Length: 609
Image (cartoon, rainbow, N blue to C red; front, side):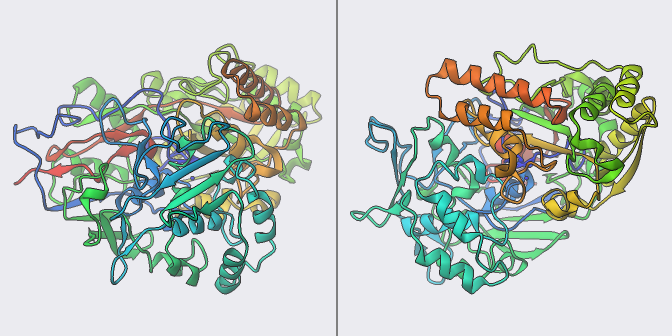
């Protein structure tokens, strides 16, 4: 979650870890730490939940897009939690933060309740009566809004980065998207005209109920209901047709269906929220919305933010995209600070991206032999130490982290051992006896990104590989660099760091392989295959695994795809980390949601003082 997700991210690294593109993750059913998480509605002083006040979130950077159907970055998902709702989401209930629960939908569809057909090819959701847009006057959210939202995810201006998850799964959607790609991306009118004049058989309004949306699938997919927790499946109001998706103009004209409305958005500086008068608690069992207002500051730095939170400073309640500095985490762990905890995730975060189409060094990174030498030249243990050691950042040597289908057979996938001398020999054998000169794209504002740049620079030099840093702002890192294929093709960068989390949980291997490794289908902006890796062997394995209905066979297929990606040295995994989290002591009910890689801001409250 961009990390993404989620986006899982994507899906999907501002202060300690490289925030996943997606916004998802977590094999453990996680909640906040200390004495303030999941405490049955009581705060540290023994009182009941407090309503009112302003929640102040502190950060160093911005969301990717202020557009629910397009955002694919964990920080984008964190902000969306305040003002956007999905058909399905995750509750702030300790022990159940990875469970799918109905959000806008009246219920989770199953074959038992008739929401899923016996053949598994039709899935229906009915939107709750009373779920409203904050228009003037407020307006009921309908199935037509849901159809609009799904359609606009493959718009030609800025499509959703996780399209490979479902583009071929929904009947007729691939053809719709192929046609959409030909529309003028700079014309909101042309985008809306195509969107509204072309139907998709696989997503439609039930003729018997304007609040029921019907999905038709090309194949049964056990993971589809979980997939609809993606923000891409958010409904979109008709007013959005006036703007280019994900545009700066739309960001200033958002319409909320969550508990808060955006009252001010100054990109890369501040986001202000006020209570949404159109929101009804009776239609939202997930978000309690205890505080009246939320102010997100995006101009801080990790060290100062940590100091403010530890000092319990006024107007400093919780983190936004900034987490405890790497140097502070060991002390927080050893001191058993009750306001610090490690949030579990199902993520590969960060990992090293190889730009396979870079023209630099005579196109060296296009060669598997060269990438294998890089795998041998990188010291994973040193990078893990940069990320506070194995307690915080346990090692990961392949694609899928624990808790995702396919991992059972993957524990033995560790094809490359650190050996600088061997890497140098292998580079020479591949035609590069004088080594390589690589450009490393990173974020100077991120303490971890900066530390890993320095470590890679030092470690790779032993193999004759020299690295030059290309530092860019946090807000531009994905949107202006990794998500733009032409930037990779020009050789602006050769290697970089990214992060990824599962877009959903359990049966979620597809949410790693489809957006990250599924060849041209996953090239940005439609996917998050930032290094433009393309392998016929991997593509075939992914296609076979995604269609397999037998769980044991599916798991074996995903494990085979995992091994193939590593044999191709498509990327260098580092860790499946836990997320360090810190909050002020006056913040209560601090439940960690893996999907947003943070505390749920819609369920916290503040001490009366």
